[in-house]
Image (cartoon, rainbow, N blue to C red; front, side, top):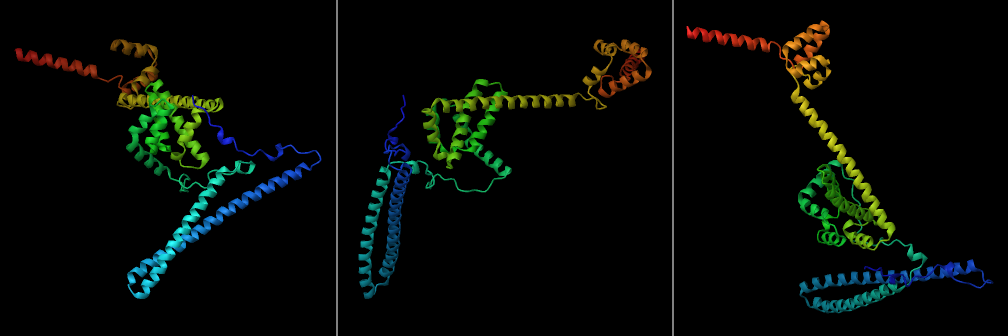
Amino acid sequence: MTTIDYSVWDHIEVSDDEDDTHPNIDTPSLFRWRHQARVDRMEQFEKEGSDMEKSQAECRRKLADVQKRIKELESAGTDDAKAELSRAQSEEKQLKKEDRSWEKKLDEHRREEKKMPWNVDTLSKEGFSKSVVNIKPEVKEETEEEKEQKHRTFVEKYEKQIKHFGMLRRWDDSQKYLSDNPHLVCEETANYLVIMCIDLEVEEKHALMEQVAHQTIVMQFILELAKSLKVDPRGCFRQFFAKIKTADQQYQDAFNDELESFKERVRGRAKIRIEKAMKEYEEQEKQKRLGPGGLDPVDVYESLPEELQKCFDEKDIQMLQDAISKMDPTEAKIHMQKCIESGLWVPNSRTEEEAGDKEEEKEEGEEKE
């Protein structure tokens, strides 16, 4: 079982107002004096460190000048240059020794700083203001076209790795895989995983969708943590795993709530996509069915009176003629015109067919004669 190391909290100075004082002492004044004294000590300590850094920087500047002068004197070759070269080399040696001395003092100063107890002033101090590696540089806002191209390029290159991450289940496996492939810790991976979840839900692979959804929220939490800390996501994903594996119930509940909410959104998006696909399919099928006049035979059939529908069901022409003769001529004409334009009724086809049969019989009779 993983345990939390609480030793880091062992040397925290308690707040001034927690101290017991004598009732005859002006407590607020005492607190102010103590606080001011502590602030003065901190400022003096920081000033000492700053002065040492400036002194070391000045020493290194002089050293760089001397080394540059030594190179110039070595190429001169005159007697005066040789004498000057000797003095310059001696000065270089002294400056290197001085630089090592400043470095040693600064190391000692840093060790002392780490030993200093935390207090109400240092606890609330910004912890990431001096980060050089992880602070994200200010960049211009990308256009939608640039974002789309960036996403497409990234997916083409790393699609296989993203899918592998999406199938992982254990915290340790996910952390190790991101450690081996830190380039995956980015917005493009999260976006692809969202699309992957919707695709799986559309394909009715519900269990697999829920697994990938879990990894999607893992990536989203890492990105949110990086945003809150103002650091590169690749530099803080280990913090997320350390936090989630040792988190209290409240943090776990927050993660699980977000996961369940995300899965519901995925199901909703998948439903919309399926409905849209069905509408597009039905429209394509309708276009294929359209008759010579541009009408849909299904729509026309459903608009016909029941007695006419029965005629088409039975494919009985005589029944159709009888039904038409009993209807109002104007209404009958409208219905039959729609049938022709939709292809339900092809005019004169039967008459032409009968005429063709008679012509064939006539030709056969002539041949026999």
